[in-house]
Length: 458
Image (cartoon, rainbow, N blue to C red):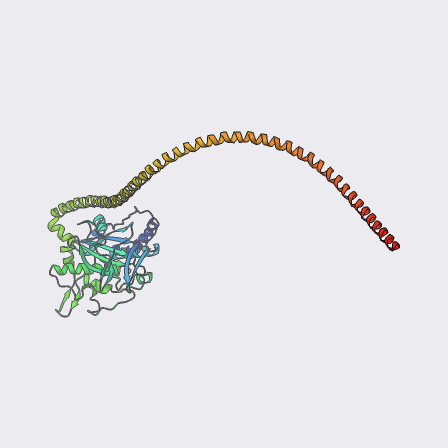
């Protein structure tokens, strides 16, 4: 069914070279301005594919927006949680190698009907927004990455866009999501999670997850044109009896789907996307460019201008918000100042009343002061008189003091005389006492003699 050509024999070598380049570039990721792109040699691939078929080749231009870093909040088990992290360089290398493998799978499995170019951009800022779906859980919707899509994938630039993000500890029921359209239905939008390293090496071709999600969009595009797709489109492998193998994964089913060779028992016909369908319609982007090419160019110009106006509006809105916030701060400050002014006014009135009361008290004290000053003057006059009297009394005191000294000297002299007189008096007392004793003894002797004499006489 599939004939190997020189084009596809180069796949392993190109994948290895691309992986080595990615490891080199991922080391430069610290520079937030760094963006790199690798494109398949489209002209070479076209010339080789045209050797297989004369029909025009469908060329898909793919963009990979890789978000190595996230900083998001989410709800798990009823609790609000936050996660900020960055995937390893090895994980980035694994993902980009798988993406490059996918671009080769498109040509290999379509038997050269579809060729791919690709651009890989390491988004220099973290993913900060996620949407929530009750079935799928959290995922980066086109609205969540709208600014990056407008910047990197404006209308008509790419046929498909893949967003790969680092989900870290956030538990999710899916590996990839597909079948979504952006840019008014002209671009296929798919989402792939980083998951864990072992998932990417669990078997099959590394790029299958990208191929699977892309085919959801491709199948729905062709279905919208009226073509019959297999039941389940990219999910229809088991329904139609295909078996997953470790070597090929589901690529046997994808090969038949991309070559219009999936047998649909319900309608008893082969379904899928034939080479003629690829050649005629290719992608929704090509289909619209064919129909509305000039309008799309004008539309892109208008979108670019609209984006510029939107940025200007955002700047004005941000400035307005800043001024509004400043105005709010000034209003608060004014109200606080007004409140303080009212408080100061009240304090002024209180101080004024207090001043009036103090003024009244001052007048009263002033009158009392005048009265006291009159009394003071009178007392000062009395004091002068007293001071004069004091001077006179002091003079008298000095005179009396002198007299006191004189009297004191006289007293000492008299005291000495008194002491001398008392000594003499004591002498005379002792003399009188002695004489009295002698006199009494004499009287007694005389009486005794008289008594004796009387006795003798009798």
